[in-house]
Length: 54
Image (cartoon, rainbow, N blue to C red; front, top):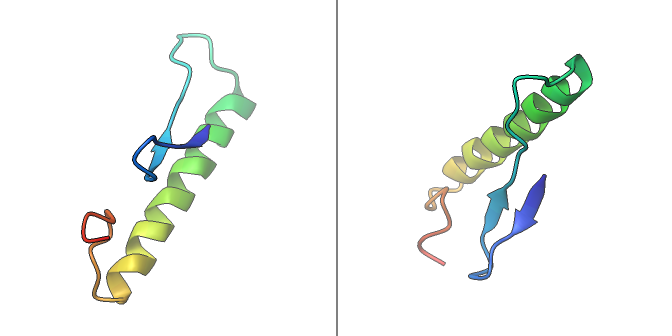
């Protein structure tokens, strides 16, 4: 689950279990890939992709 951190940043929360079904794994991977896409896109702007320079 994507969430907003108290400092205004973006965070992720996931449930950890040995019993994830295929849909949960796909959802987790989809969210993580979106996060990586945003970090990569931010790098093209010559800014800090972590947002630490904000």
